[in-house]
Amino acid sequence: MNSAIDESAPPAEASATQGLDGSAARHAATTRRVAAVLGLLMVAVLASLPAWAERSTQRTATEFLYMLALAQMWNLLAGYGGLLSVGQQAFVGLGAYSLVALGLHAGLNAFVVVPLAGIVGAVAAVVVAPLVFRLRGAHFAVGTWVVAEVLRILVANMPFVSGGSGVSVAATVSGMAVDVREAGTLWMALALGVGATLGVYALLRSRLGLALVAVRDSERASQSLGIDVQRVKWLVWVAAAAGCAMTGALIFTTKLRVSPDNAFSMDWSTMMFFIVVIGGIGTLEGPILGALVYFVLREWLSDLGGIYLIVLGLATMLVMLFAHGGLWGLVARRLNLQLFAVQRRVDEGGS
Image (spheres, rainbow, N blue to C red):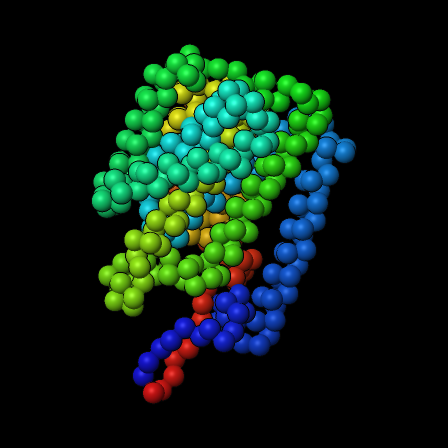
């Protein structure tokens, strides 16, 4: 008896039909098609907000989308790659200061800086990878945090970017009308949020995605199958860094002021952790649901000051204790639902 990955069928269909009879498989496929149509409609609605919605609504949508992008990047790193980083704020901060260096000093438009910030984040990730990849488990987590703190201190002591006092980046969008700036920011956030989700989906459907999940589950077994474990982890680390850096540049385009304490704040990683764990780590649907829950709780509890953070912490603990798959895991088990089919079917056959 041997088993092999069935590459003859598309991965999405493979996962949809695994363990299901014909009727259940057709129902699952229909559900995904309906979800895809609703998703496209939602993207269209979000893209059209500048034509009919108030600026406050556009800003809320922008914030939701860039938080979704950050959460999907952290989910890719920790949920699928098994790399538990608590220092992703390092790349958010580098993206923010790319806005200072390339926007203020080089004179580039903020929306041009956003993709360039991804290159800055990727290069930084390549530079620190030899250091952090020497660490494992909790040591890796602490190491990523140390990298973020070192970067924060270095930036705070660099007069070129105004040091620890912070600096306004309003000049990077000064030539735009307010409506144009708001619309451009929303569309860029939409590209990052949707792009991060679909990008991770495409990755997980590929052979590299299969290797990534195998490495997460067992590095030793993956090596025995000929997978280059370090290469797979390196690629995911760099991709997540680039995504966080681009999002960081966009975030501070909306805030219009950058300081080391805000740009490299641990709050960014805390927010990513909360959204992914609440929604469901290791699923593409989880960060979407988690971001929605985060926004609802924040709106309901924002007037409570410090109690708001306590409630978020308690909610995270309860989910970790009683819903290991997050809220999406509960929904998926109860309704037998999967919106993004990324698993593979394993065919068992006699030799």
